[in-house]
Amino acid sequence: MRLVTAGACAAAIFSAACGDGAERPSVIVIIADDAGYVDFGSYGSTEFPTPNIDAIAARGVRFTAGYTTASVCSPSRAGLITGRYQQRFGHEFNLPRTPQAGSLLENMGLRLDQRTLADAMQALGYRTAAIGKWHLGYTTPYHPLERGFDEFFGFLHGSRSYFPITRDMDGGTRILRNDAPQPEQGYLTDVLADEATAFIERNRDQQFFLYLSFNAVHTPMHAKPEHESRFASIDDERRRTLGGMTLALDEAVGQITAKLDDLGLLENTLVFFINDNGGATNNASTNGPLRGQKGDKFEGGIRVPFMVQWPATLPQGVDYALPVSALDIFPTVTSTVSGRTADSSLDGVNLLPYLTGEIADRPHEMLYWRRGVVAAVRRGDWKLIRVAGEPAWLFDLADDPWEERNRLSDHPALVEELLEALDGWEADMVEPLWRTDPYWTQNQIEKHRANQ
Image 1 (tube, rainbow, N blue to C red):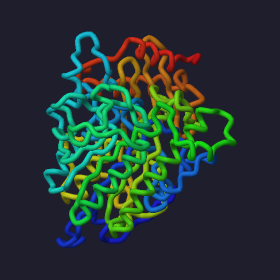
Image 2: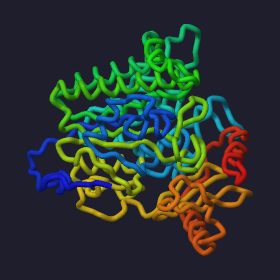
Image 3: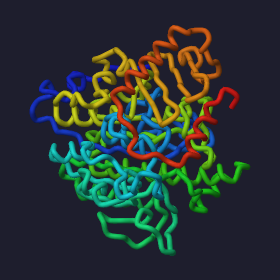
Image 4: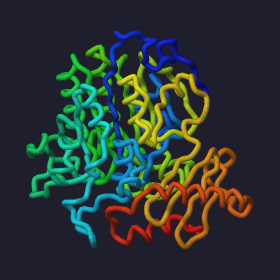
């Protein structure tokens, strides 16, 4: 790991040492969807060129042990946008599109007593916008405009066509501007990039917070023909399409950073880029040497591409190897722009003093995951996965980062310690507010069976 210390103002973490006249940064959080861990150039891809995404790492910090709080879409977003483990407020499972036993769709969504990052940024005087995929509630109380955002352009469900839809569709797949349906036009990744750059342009003279949640590269597999043709040498048809979808995503990110540069905002805009969970199998993504995939607790399900840039303050072109979490985005942003210590109710930490070298310790000694019948804990470099009705898994990630050797029988005392830690964490969590189809319960168990 190469980590350098930024200048004195950076080390003070935008505090009084920088002077009262220091300008607060604007903030952009960019989320990709279901991408493979090694499907971006900065994480090792040789098939998919992603120069614009890679440039974020080059202008900032690349996390090589960056985690989300869930291996599926909706709960991972709930953790990111609140800075709290989503199990604290019952958002443990994906939002279903159809009613489930004991749950009404109109009552499902990010619990209304939870404060979002957008709420916090509004209170700090920022203009806020959510663009793209929402997936945190489909009815009015859970709409982005009710959760701290001044503007919304996107769709409420977890996926939809990238090309214009001409048939009738339900409200969750319609493109909305605020709460008004919009005409269908253009390739969706391009449309979202256009909306994001227009928002930046409109707010060039004030601080803004942009939550930009692409649905790329989630299914359905839709690429523009001119993009897919660039990957004609790839034999797998789905992976050719994925290449085209990834190219469109990279161009969209480049459009946004180019707009910042054109407006003179690039230096003082804090930009995060993160994938929502591990790469999926149904979109032909690859997690490379990481074991596992979307939906499970192996590294391939929860460790993701994650990077941050703030050229005015952060070191550039460095790797940070200690474990960090999507939970950390909320406190990093709010502490940075307010100059105050992060709210103690948050589970994330302010990463800036770690990234500038002011603090050398681990940001997190413990990290936890749970979705129903499978849970996991990482302490230091040891990781335990607990599976209902099945033997547990124990990995030494320092010695075995690809999780090839189950050390369960070698360290029985450590296993007991980690199970007790997991039990202690769960004691502070609540029962899920809804559950998904029983198929997914069995699916999780199958993914984590010792003979899988």
